[in-house]
Image (cartoon, rainbow, N blue to C red):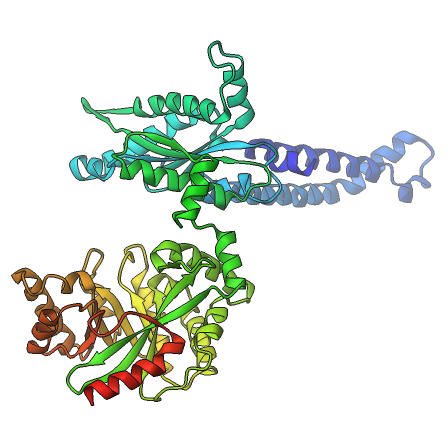
Length: 533
């Protein structure tokens, strides 16, 4: 009954409130009219009714107004609540489900009662629409795409905008099996064959979507990956499988589709191409994640100044996974753990810093993403993690914040949180600066202590004049801003010679050392001292 009321349209909810009001008020009026408090003074019923009506007229009018205003107020709340729900659950542009709503309706919360086929759809090279025709036309195309997607998915609850030009569709798996079970020529088809046949028809429909805008026909191809989402499956896992299938399609030229069957999933997991939240969570419990440490050398006086802490996942078979393979899911787990108060970072800290006892003048730098500082109070949470590390080692901790892929972060809000950390005495470094998402405004306005030049910028400094001009320009700005500058990814003596000539003395890279486990740090320091001092 409650679920039925929740799912009613706003107009129906308001109508029910007013009907309820009329029923309650009518009942109250009749009870009050025949109240025994006044009846004993009169001999017949007519006198009772007339007297009670006259006596209670003003009281009834007052109560009517109070009841009416209460219902109007409740109706206003219902309308506003439904409007807010709509904003949160329905994508304003395309009018399909938002990611939040999709997970709410189909997530691991017991609401899923069928096995589904889930599709992750990407519009191929959609950026070219915005670039060629403008964002207004791009929005029109996305709106049209959402409308057509709802027709393909039959119901708006089966369609979702996952973000940007990426959409999702779900289909009842039984409907797919039934369709090809009863269709002539498909008898004996395996489930995978049926899904591939179904996918071919969906792909054809997706590619037929077009926008006719001012006599300009805009039509793009689509790519999608699909996977089965069973009642007992975790939706995050199925999305990972479908997303991996989509990445394979993109890698092979786009404009196609791929189903993540059991063989595909097993192979991808064996090659570490699919990382699930459960798998990563289990790895954390088994202490398979730890830091490796790469030294940063001051070539001016041949000393070790820092060790950067680089997270690694060592699998039971000895395979070591780099952050690019699992970092996004690790960030998701870490964010969730901070809300729950469990702080999964600390299992990594405990394992990594155990038994490290080196010169207190050597500093450690820990990597964070700008998104870690995007919310109010984030600086305090980061400082709590730093303080925890300080219970394990006495060395100074530097916060490194990666420059890559931060375009959607509110820099002003993040800057306040970074400043909070600085006010507690922590130095902050801008990591990976100089490529792709590098932001000059962020370089100038965020209170950095250190700027780290990305490896891609260092790669060509020996042979490419433009790379040298860029490096020297950033160095000049860093010096004028009173920032130290570190060159990452130095691998050749020629690169080292050039950097030394222009006055960049803090060097990190394979030329000096690859990242090493914590139990090798002391040995490396002794070898370095013996070689250079």
